[in-house]
Image (cartoon, rainbow, N blue to C red; front, side, top):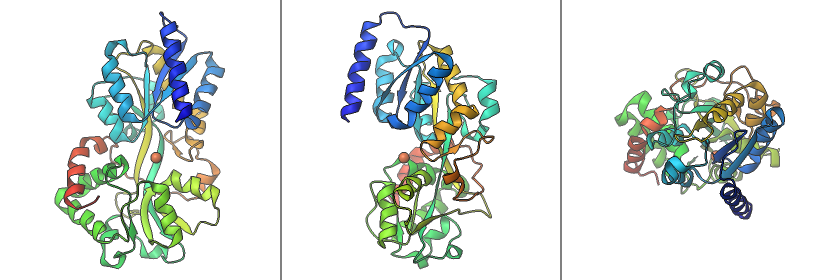
Length: 333
Ligand code: FE
C-alpha cells in the first residue's frame, strides 16, 4: 500500500509538471499487481524507447477515476482482470474500440470484446481443486456434479461477491438457463463444509488442511501456493471435458475513451499480444498466454492440458447482474 501511494504521488507530480504530454510515452491505469506488470513495460521500453507510466489500484477506483477525469484523463490504457470487469468498463463508457489486425490474429475472438473495446492478454482457468488424500480424481466430473449429495459437507467456495464467481455463474446461466443454474448453485451452497472464503489461496489451504475436500479456484493461486509448498496435498481437476469444457477467464486491457496517446496505446496493446510479451505477461503470474501460439511456462504446462469452454468471455459481463441476483437467491454469501 505504501509503495502504491508513493507511486501515485510521484505520478501526480510528474503529470502536473508536464503541461504538454510527450508523444513517446503511454500512461496506464492498471489493476494488476506492480510486480506482474512492470517487467512487461520494462521490456517494451527497452525495445521501443517508449516510456510507460503506470499507476496501480483496484478496478473500481480506476474506472471511477477515468469517468471523473473524462476528456482530461492522462490515461491511455486500462489493464484489469476478468472479462466481467472489462465489460463493465466498456459499459461505463471509459474505453474506445481499437481495430487491429495484429490483435485479431494473435488473440482468439472468444477472449476479445465483440466491439473491440478490450482484449484478453492472459488466461486463467477457474477449475476444481481436490484433496489428493481424500478424493480420487475419478470421483470428479463436472462443476454441476459438485451439487450432488456425495459432496455434502465437503465443498469449499469463495464469496459470491468476487467477480470470478459471478463470471463462472454467468457462464453456467449461458449454458443451462437460470432455473437449472439456480438448482446447481443451491446444491453447492447446501454442500458447503464451512463459511465462504475471502480469497482463493485460503480456500486451497483449507483443502490442504482437511477442512474440505474440493473447491473451485483460479489456477495461478494454486501455482503460487504450490511454489511455496511443493508438498501441497491438492491438485487441479479439469471438469466438463465431455461437454463444454473448463471455465476460462482472463486478464486484459483496452484503450481509454479519451486516451491522449491512443496510437501509442494501440501499439503497446498490440505488442502485448505478441509472443515476446505474452511469455512475460502470462509467465510472471503462472497464467496461460492468450495467444495460442505461445506455450505456457513449464510449471503451468505440468498441470496438464484441457479443453476450455469456447463461450465468449464477455458473457461474464452481459450476465453479471443476473448471476449476482441468482447467487443471492441461492444463499451464496
Ligand atoms: Fe486473482
